[in-house]
Image (cartoon, rainbow, N blue to C red; front, side, top):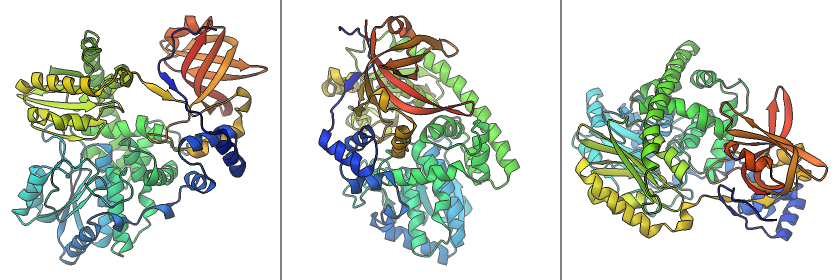
Length: 573
């Protein structure tokens, strides 16, 4: 049979060795296709598979393996003995705000007088700047602890030292140049780091500091009480869910499911999350996280911090409702800019210029990062969106796996005022008269670095499976691999030579999605294909289908139903 052109992605399928899969399946007493996923993820023996499937807090690394941890703990001990005031400075996103909340909820248990500072995104921008030093002087703080920022803030640390204020940096962003002249720099990504895991989010590094203080007897409370914040910040920052992050998020999600925390309960309520419903990374990423990020994006991160510090249910619910309103406002602003940017991108020759860079006057800088992310998702190109206000351009960028945005910005830094970030996401400031040169330099790098195949999204297939093997028991076995996210994506399986049991139908408000019932032999299963409504005519007339899908248990009207969530389709007419 000849296939028609439908797959959205390239299909990559490197089948694992059959003997290894079968041996692991027998030893673990699990279906072979689940064992195949473990093998694909690098867990080829029983010992490593058991460790992965049973994340244990006992397997967390000793926090004192992190460079400068001894120095950080000793400086905090000194602050306690001398009754110094301590200022915790964070960022305005979920990772930064949860990190500030973690230290604000933890350090006072030792008797330390703790104050907090979150920058205003609109007036101060990202990072650790002189504004926080000025505030420290105002309140008489002699020690500042940064969370989720500070690794490149050499001038700010030196400025603070002029006034006798010490700094402890805790961060997870890339080091760019010499380390700041701080008392301690806690960052698993610092050059020549001896720490075994460099995937921690900012909240993860802050958690390590608190763990070290507990280990030395300076704090006395169960660290498990903070895991819900760690899960929230780690998932929202899209950190890899491997190693320590997997352990922290696994236990944090369980704590978040049954939380008694006033602020988190209120946040779940406005997000319409049913009490007791199992929490997962999707819920954080698309329901809780955006409501926290929204207030930071629109210049009021203190709302989110106050929510996470609230002890009264009434106060928490009032703050959560306000945050929900701000989130709706953010969505409206974002949609207007996104429409404008899409119209411009659709006029570009993306084959000739693989790096999408757009700029506009007075776009809201708080949402340009989301716009860049959605443009990258839609066109699968590295993207920077720049807004120009009061003679300064502020940009936010997102990238694809094969192109490091941070490295690119580093190479064109002569055109920028400042920049920072990761391989996949970064921010910068630029003079408007430099934007043209910046675009040309970025395009030159992209053309040199990106091959045509890099610009086609691909889907990695974990294993081939038959409909007959998809049942409640096998899916529950598969779900033991959760939580799923970056570094441990939802498993995707190839199911071949399927046909329609019943005619497909369009679903969704705009008919954008497809509901199917697919069969093989005498067995059939329901399936949902989000975003495939436009292919209805081709799919309904297909003689046979191959699909890439994730089997799942769909809960509907208090019933559990088997379902395939389809990621891509290949049709044979």
